[in-house]
Image (cartoon, one colour):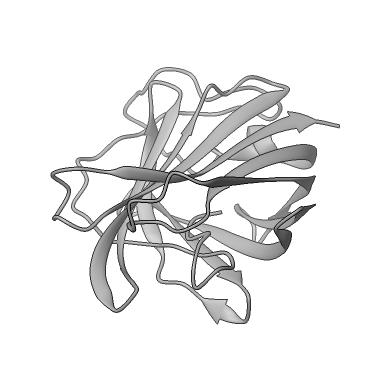
Length: 187
């Protein structure tokens, strides 16, 4: 679900150099500690249906601290013999957010690409891997006409819950502003 904000809707994505990080993940279980191996199953724990509680910073990189809340569902399905497709549908007082994320694993690079589409826009992908039970992904995008970096982190992974956090940086990664927090609970 990388790239969730763009022009009042959903979106984000960036590209930043990342050191090689890998960790196995078993179906319905969080990824264990990093090991030298193929990470192509790192998202298997997420296959299924989830209740999603989402908080989104209303105006990222503006100095605003106003957050809006949403609730809905996320459905994750396996596709393409190792990737997965994420379907997000949430709503709240600020409206509705719908989007899809196609996650693909590159075994040569040992990295995932997370490709998000929402609001009629396909965002640039974020790239990364899991290490010590935590997924970290980076990419480049634009926000309000300026180049930014995007960081997407998946943490607190258990068999029945996980946390997803997106942050933007407008200063080359010196500082980060979190603008998207989702907590999924298995249905």
